[in-house]
Length: 330
Image (cartoon, rainbow, N blue to C red; front, side):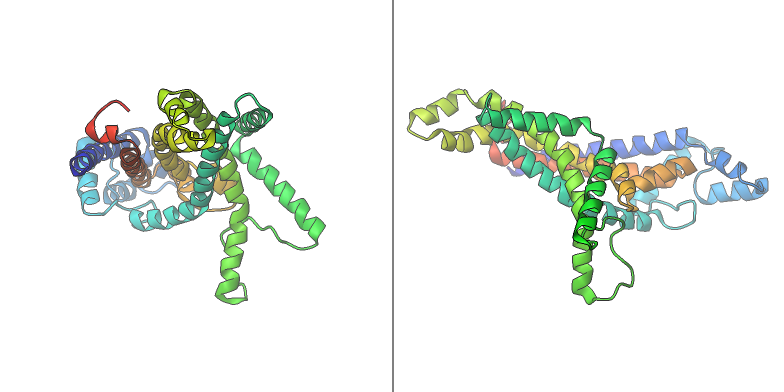
């Protein structure tokens, strides 16, 4: 197991460095911060523009390789450079990441767990009413864009508030600054503001995982090891849970790993719908402003998040299936 882990860590670390480097090179080559400065009204003097770009390591008159080496040297020491506003990128990235994580994590975990359970349940009742209900609901959710789903839930929550005569559901922002009531009230207020974002993300994730898990379970329902377990006297439910689900969930760990990193960074629609200022919103704003250092930092974070998630997936898959550790065919 130790050899397997070392090999995986080395492979994933190399992939993270390669992905982060490509992210910086693409951002530096595609974005045009000089044009953003020159288009300002009134137009700053040329000397001011050159000095500003030089101070931020964004001077396009320097070779791209030289700018990359400066950026990579800083990143190796934990310095991602400065934003357009002159603030350290890592400080803003850390703050935005906290906002995105608190917004997305509960819904992603809940949606993943429910999706796997519903997919397995639907497969075990293949062709019956429960299977058709889960499949139909999943297709319906997949057809609805996340932004539309968020607005629909807000409309329903607004109607519920009107019917109750009180604002039970609140969904804009993380908390109410300066609200009286102490820490306990602040925690309760933060929790109720998470209800709708969590429901939105969980429903979207649930539909994806349910469809994927259902297909995987159908593949193993009639596998030899499941039939052998039934022949030894195990009840159908026990055989499916102990042998069918365990086999079918191994490829699911890989799918979960790669989607979790992307969900965290791609939640711009959810952040917009619920008034959160996270990484997704920052990435879109940074691209429009030509803020290469900020875009490169987000891309570096994306690479690390996906690689770390993949590493977690490898560990889980190895724990579930010994053939993964020995390099055999799962």
